[in-house]
Length: 221
Image (cartoon, rainbow, N blue to C red):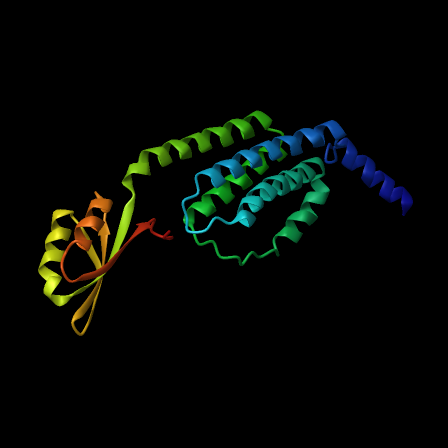
């Protein structure tokens, strides 16, 4: 039996299915993955525009990059071990809900960076992460002046015409309207001169209060 095991081990080694990982190579893989993860973490934290920033998700991006790189490095060094690892990972299920679609993009980018770093493509991992983050930052800068606001106000029915005229002037679009007796609660989308629209509507006689909220589609703050 021992002779058979030795023969199998020798054949596997001769076929190149098992490679020894040097400490220098391991440090290089994890160091590259760490660098890519830190870049993603900083970009995500600095340019996040959601309602509440989650530090746990930022750490998840960093840990995902390192973990994927660690897995891919192990699989690439031992083909026999990779078969069992693929089977084990296939039963893993993640049920955490991702509220912002942009978070999925960052998580997918972290996995991609970990894959390339674990495969030994260090330059590709760093260059790809940097380039995609640069494109993201540029697009954030372009869309900075396209902020949409929600104007929430409550007024008497006598002020209906004046409020409608103000919204038409500011190209506001009514999102919801609720009538309760002589009071009306209205929510409108304002894309231009939101501050001026807030000042104008509060000056209308019959308007009780008005609130301006930054609207991002999935989160408000």
